[in-house]
View (cartoon, rainbow, N blue to C red):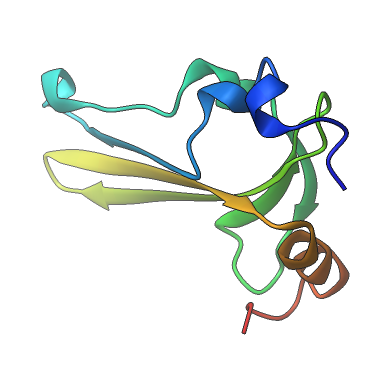
Length: 104
């Protein structure tokens, strides 16, 4: 349960329901990043079924997010991708309680 509405939170009010970042080595001028406020979220659970995903929570309002991070090595460069998705309380609690299973 959220402690306050997302729109009143100094952290989550700067985050959309879906945020993406993508960086390509050697093409830094095209890089995109998650907003700075995403760095303030705290990891509450690593999802064992997919090591690239964690559940994060905002300490200020209690909102949950799923962070997907992937690094891909490519000769001549590499790619980094981050996808941050806002979750409902039910989605977050299910993932926290079932870290070995992918969401249905």
